[in-house]
Length: 216
Image (cartoon, rainbow, N blue to C red; front, side, top):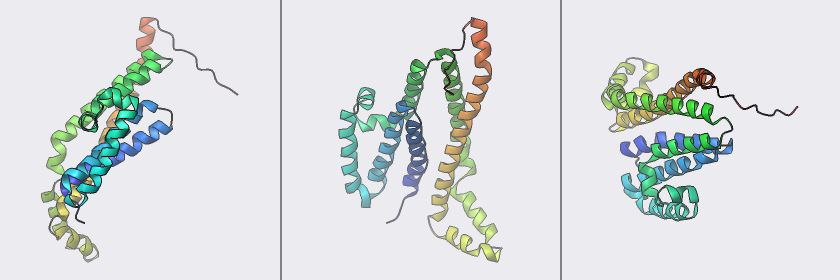
């Protein structure tokens, strides 16, 4: 079964994001469940749209997602349909941050760090969307293949990349992985910068940071 480039472009980053959000749910952030749900549904929908061989099978999974959406209240409130969720991942991420802030003991501090993290993430993703395609694409991968063919020990790699369609698929995988890494890195940078100014902002407003009870 041949996997199309379009399918890889959706599934590679969405799979990683889905996994990371599931881990966040397991680590005490239940509000991230809607984001994981949306990313998972995005993968299934992409399989239905971009691969004829799996379209009938994946349609069954989409039906399951739709049924789940009707029963799972956070998703139900968000839009009640999988199609809405797959096209509105970023609003769901913002909503999960808003819920995290609203339920946090240190609401102001959490709000500042979450806002900073999201600002960093969206800024980083915006830059990648503008420039990543210019750097990671089938033409540049093909150029790498021509360079590697000069080294005998890299001949298998060169031959693989030379096959029709392989260069575009590899470019799609690399872009997906780099996009996720860039998104995560931008989020962390934004969060760290916001955390540094969080105490200063609270101090200037006369807001005390709630003390967290620690058990010995």
